[in-house]
Length: 451
Image 1 (spheres, rainbow, N blue to C red):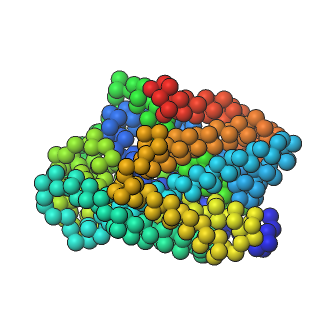
Image 2 (spheres, rainbow, N blue to C red):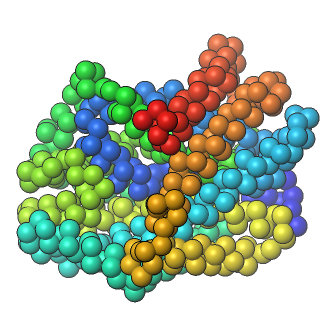
Image 3 (cartoon, rainbow, N blue to C red):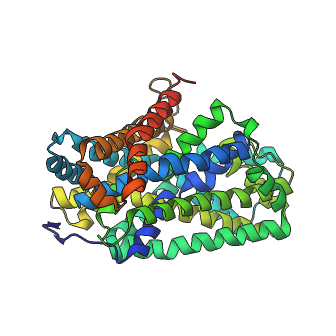
C-alpha cells in the first residue's frame, strides 16, 4: 500500500514482528494483573483454565486479527474498509477499526497514569524501601494518589517516553525499541526467578502455580481466566491489526501467533514465579489483590536480603512492560492520522499524545481534586476502564471473529492464514463458533448478568 507519505513501512523480518507484538501483549496485565488474579482465584486452578483459554480463544483470535491487518495493509479503519469492499459487505464494518482506535486512546490515558505509579516506585526503589510496618506501605500509596502534582508529573514523563519511540516510526522507533526492551525484559525475569531459587521460596511458588487442583475450579475462576486470556493478548484495540499491516507476506501467521502467545504466557508465569517466591519467603499473603505490586512487594523488598537491588530490577522490568504496551496503544491512532488526514508522523504523534495526556490529567485528578465526580456510580478511572475493557474490547473482538469467519470469503481467509485441511477447518470452526460464544459469555459475566 502506498500513501501520501510513501510506500507503507514493514517490519524488517519475522523476528521484529514477534518482538513488537509480544511487547504489545506483555504489559501490566502480565506483571501485575496475572499474579494478583492468580492469587485471588485459587492459584493453580486459575492457571489451568487460563492456559486452556489462551489456546482455545486467545490464539485463534490473535490469528484472525493479524490476518485482517496483513490483508488490508492500512490503519484499522482503512483496513476494514478495504476488506469490506473485497467481501462485498457494508462499510459499516469500519466500526471495528474505530472502536479499536478510540478504545486504545482512552486506555492509554489511564494506563499512562498507572504506569506513572510504577515510575514513582522505581524512583523509590533506587534508594531502597525503608523497613516500615505493613500499614506504612498502604499509607505511602494513598499519599501518592492524593498528590495531583506527582501523578501528573510521572504521567507526563511516561507519555513523553511513549511518544518519543512512536515518533521514530515503524522500524527506527517501535521495532528498535522493542529489540532492546523485550530481550532485557526476559533477562530480568530470568534473573528474578534465579533469585527466587537461591534466596526466596521458589518451590512454594511453583506448587502454588502448577500443582493443579481441578476441584478448585468454579464459575468465578472460569470467567476470570477467560476474560484475562482475551485481554492479555491486546485483542480488540487496533494494535494487532496495525502491527499485522506492517507484516510481510513471507511470515507464517499461525506459527508466529503461537510463538507470541507462548512468550506472553511465559512472561506471565515467570512473573508469577518470581513474585510469589518473594511473597512466600516473607510470609506475606498471595491473595493481596491489586495492592500486590505497590504495597505487598515493596514491603517484601524492605525485609529481604538484597531487596534494594532486587526491588529496583523488578520495577525496571515493570516499566519496560508498560512502555512496550503503551507504544502499541498509540501507534494505531497515529497510523490513522498519517494515512487518512495526510499528517506528518511528528504532527500526528504530537496531536494524539497531547490528547491522551490531557485526558490522563483528568484521570490523575480523579483520585484527589476531582474525586467527588462520578457517573453511573463510578469515578473517572473506573468509568473509562469499564467502558474500554468491559464493553469496547469485547465488542471489537466479537466483530473481528464475525467478520473473519462469517463475512470474508472463505478462500481469502484460507489464503491469508496459510492453514490447510483439518488444521484450517479446526481454526475456522473455533473462530466461527467458539470465540463469539466465549466473548458473549465474558461480556454477560462482566456486566453482571451471569455473575
